Length: 115
Image (cartoon, rainbow, N blue to C red):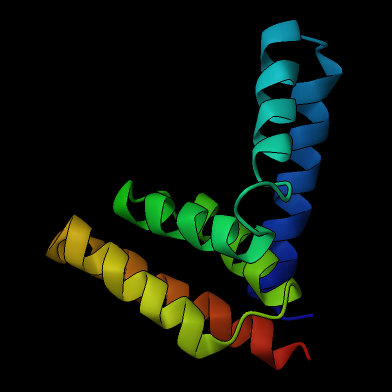
């Protein structure tokens, strides 16, 4: 596994475990809501991941972008589909999104390398 992907996943898992170990009801419910929001519904899971990716890029959350990129990759979305979604994010968010777009490309390449 690419180091950038491995480091992200290890840190995320470690900190999520630590956060959830505090047993805060509100935080646990937010985590649960986040999980359930991306389940199949009127929209399919792939569409929801792309929506999450776009929102994350516009909000400039690199961790969120990485999470949605990896999930999109696991769901079999193509680079073309992901880049098209990121192009919408860049259009909506403006040029301030470009540094996050660079890191998104880097992370997608790392995901592809681990195949």
